Every structure is written in structure tokens, then in C-alpha cells.
Length: 87
Image (tube, rainbow, N blue to C red; front, side):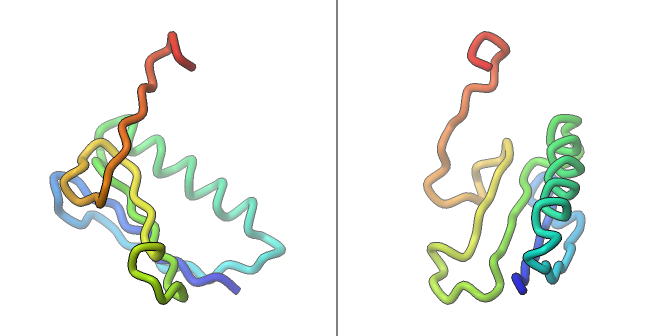
């Protein structure tokens, strides 16, 4: 089992938190469904950052994955060019 906390932020303010207990058998479907919902919210600018916390990871540098347009809450953010010419 994998324990995750998925949080959505807008303007640095927590908008939601989903706590998930994932079974390896259903991992692809569950993660795909959540990723689709959160990506749509980012694209619509309803959210500025989605944070995934791997609750069982003891190393704080490996415990979090953050994606979004607000880099202020991210450690060592990486810029991605998502223009149609590069897609």
C-alpha cells in the first residue's frame, strides 16, 4: 500500500487535501484519474500548484513532488516550456 497526500494551492492558500491509500493493483487508474483532474484545474488557473506528499518516505528531500505555475512554494523549481511548438 502507498499512502499519499495530494494538496492543491491557489495563491499560496490550501484549497483541498486528499489523503489516499493506494493499492498497487489499482495504482494506474487511481493516479491517472487524480492527475487528469488536477491538471485541468491547473490549466484553468483554479490552482497554481499541486503537491504530492509520499507519506511513508522518511527523506524530506524525496518526500514531496510539486507541479504548477507558482514556484514560490517549490524547492529548486524547473521551468518547462509547454508551448504548442515544443509539444
